[in-house]
Amino acid sequence: MKEKYGARYFTTTYIWGNEQAKRVYMKAGFIETDVVDEDGIHEVNMFIEL
Image 1 (cartoon, rainbow, N blue to C red):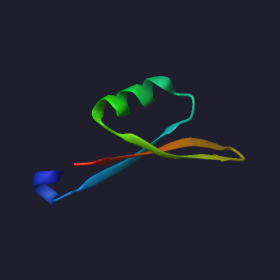
Image 2 (image 1 turned 90 degrees about the vertical axis):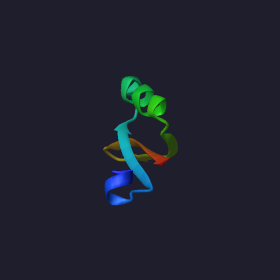
Image 3 (image 1 turned 60 degrees about the vertical axis):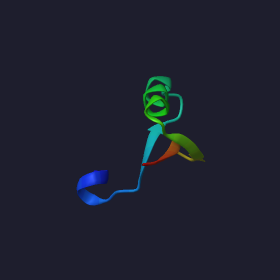
Image 4 (image 1 turned 90 degrees about the horizontal axis):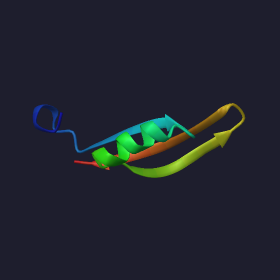
């Protein structure tokens, strides 16, 4: 994506409490930016700069 389209960063989310997803994203270099904890929504936003 970086080479073909010039992407500089990616964002993703995972459902709060999904430790397997958290480990996969953190191993790839993503960092947590914030947590959305509203009625019916419990997710963690993540960011990586390429």
